[in-house]
Image (cartoon, rainbow, N blue to C red; front, top):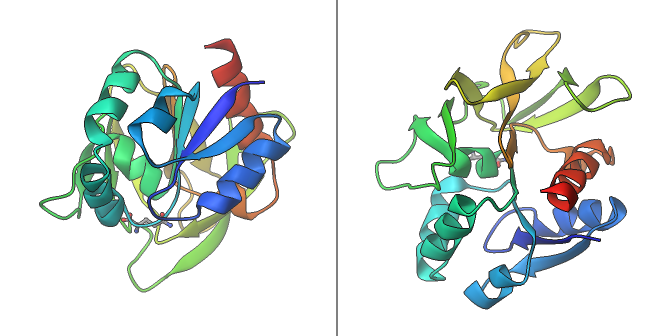
Amino acid sequence: RPTIGVLALQGDVREHLAALTGAGADARPVRRPGELDAVDGLVIPGGESTTISKLVDIFELREPIDKRIADGMPVYGSCAGMIMLATEVLDGRADQRGFAGIDMTVRRNAFGRQVDSFEAPVEITGVPGGGFHAVFIRAPWVERVGAGVEVIGTVTGGPAAERIVAVRQGNLLATSFHPELTGDPRVHAYFVELARTA
Ligand code: GLN
């Protein structure tokens, strides 16, 4: 059973802990460098990337997380967590900083600033069982990926069809949407398996 941490500074931490537990992980919150040392993988939850960015510095987690990512620790970022993993952020705040682990350009609040949330069908390569009913909340989408990045998920219908909403680069996984909110365990199961075999 891999031990998976959820970065517990801000955002929907509890929902990710529950989803990871349901997917067979030993899930625990991470707020201190010592807690980070004890996990095999990390989830960066949805929330507000500008706030998470600030708190990562205040809690002195930036350097330890950068280092674990460089050493190959599996990380899954959902929504704000996707933004925290991107090398480039459009419509971000000048002072927000992520871990720059996935070579991609994301646009913050891309699905429209007026639309707080919407739902759309998404297919994910490597995740069996058919399409996802994906929930997006002031979500980013991916506008560019580098050569080493696999596009694994796109919207398959509606006004945002074809938009890239899930990617993987090595042990790093990111989705624009929130599988932790819809009771569909497959993305967390995919990540737990990634962390188990990494
Ligand atoms: N709009 C948020 C941000 O920029 C992300 C929203 C979310 O995580 N649900 O960080």
